[in-house]
Image (cartoon, rainbow, N blue to C red; front, side):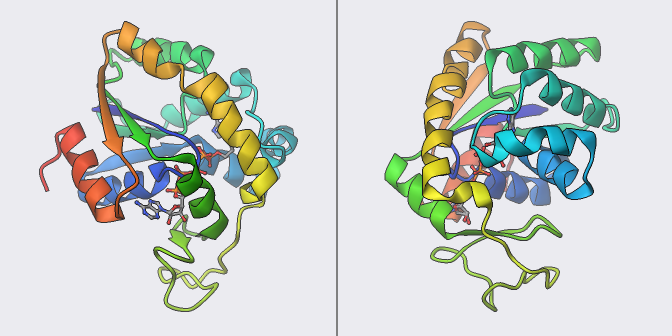
Length: 217
Ligand code: AP5
């Protein structure tokens, strides 16, 4: 099964993908996480992506497609794959289809997570991430047991620099301009599309998400 998770910044794609990955054996492919890892490792890609990410802009399609193709080459051809934050543009969606066709696979379901903008802004201002193990927290809805410390690996939690309000505004605009049109793209291409109301508690969103992708819990 190949699942695309679509939805604006802060809607909970990463939180829900991590939950599903814990319940089924699946590859969670987050292009945001791959880019942040490339930045931490100081790779050429990381350096090229840095200014775009800090400004809340999209990293160019050719860099993203090359990164994803390379990552896919290390994934078993029959693995369940959860695509989080990719594709984000029509060019990326077409590139994804081409890559999947070459291994006789396709996008099986597109899940669109939806929540009002004021909730997204609030969630992002309270988000804390663990750069070491990838765990996601929120100072309001899911704080760690000890402030600033990851429950899972004791790493130091960070507030992502692109979660500053002015950058968040740009990321939300860009989502509407470039990524929201992918809903029509997938509708026109006959993909199974499921909408999940994401302004509910995490467990309730997960119940609806698991049901949308047909995973029994
Ligand atoms: P990326 O890291 O992918 O960011 P994003 O898509 O903007 O999504 P977020 O990670 O901000 O949010 P999320 O939906 O995963 O929410 P989360 O689960 O964390 O990309 C970062 C940057 O990289 C981009 O801006 C771009 O520059 C570049 N990039 C990445 N991919 C690219 C691509 N394909 N093309 C071009 N450029 C690319 O949850 C948010 C918060 O809410 C957390 O604190 C969480 O605890 C909390 N929360 C979650 N669910 C709930 C709930 N139900 N109730 C209460 N709180 C909740």
